[in-house]
Length: 253
Length: 288
Image (cartoon, rainbow over all chains, first blue to last red; front, top):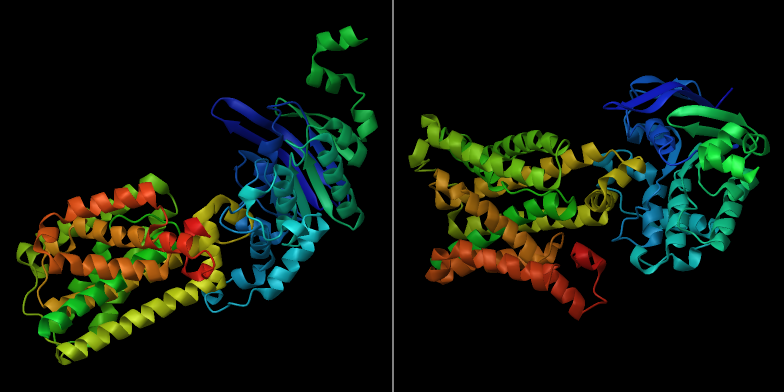
């Protein structure tokens, strides 16, 4: 059975069809790549899953449970861990504090009780563990404004991991990184997956997508274009056409 | 001696009022330009109840509860609007409050409520009560600041969309900030009414909301000790120097401008830059 099951999702923004009857599923333990050219509807799909955008039609199920009517924080607490395309650290907190806030969910899930809970050492210990896992433990006490983008991207993944999500939803985690950083980051994702973490990855870096994903779903103009193993999907003419245009395919041929 | 006691009492009441706004604006990042409306709700409720022979502390508590209830209602608006729009909404709350109390005969209309009963503690006793409340409110602020609730408030203040993505129930936390902050504003109102023993609509005019906001911003948004210091200074200056009272809006406006331009962290930010090793708990947000 799929961990995440998305059925017939349609989203319209005014007269624009951002997604039309798109279905996809994500199985436990896989890295699914959701790819497509700009404007394909990938980020919209992720926002539908997390509840930021409401779908006009369709269902989002997590382990058989319908999420459609649940607010964002409930979906997150059910196991969706979302790292956004644009990094959004809390800039007045250190990297360790950013992650510790996520690690302290048992203290923050009951707002009134949280007033009487002060102890943060355990959450800070856990925070350092996750920062070490993504390779930036040395920057734990730094503030977001003083570290490079690659560190912030890693911190965001550590922050999501600290919530022990059942799946990671990553929106272009490699964007803005140079090839060395991107490869190192992709290796971290592979290692997390090897340890059992399920990942849904939106990414434009097709070399890394091909290298690390177990399966791909391709969107174009809000519709599902292709689905299958990375090698097969990236050879399909419809996919190549969507990415580089029909004329260019002929030119390359 | 009576004058000094009265001055200290007013100072204490102002500190409670500004610390209550600091919970909403400083800690949780929700702008409120109409906070004095909740001070007014507490003042009117408590004074009308004591005039109807209700025991003083029961009346004070009722003022807090009613102010807190209205605060939650305004907090519900904060779930739908943010930033500038929230500022305008809360400003509107102040004007609605004034519009209602001016028109209602049973609230005293333009003449207000006079002959509010003396709580019977004497001037020194009442000062001790006010100072006790100041200490309790400051301790509550400190506790919130160092607890997980303060941690979440800081996150909401920084970026509430990201806070939601961490599974935090942002709406409930914001409502708690409004409930606590406005209930404490109600407390300061009840104390104020029983100190001056005469209240009328202009006691809670928009300029008083700006005064409270000036105390928070000049002290250092989110800083407990900075806000206490700024409130103490700004509440007694108009009493000491008559001309400051005459030019209150001009002075506070200029001070707000100067703080924004030269020291966005307020007095606490200034202290933090002079003593960078001082504890984070006492620092304003900009300097953490």
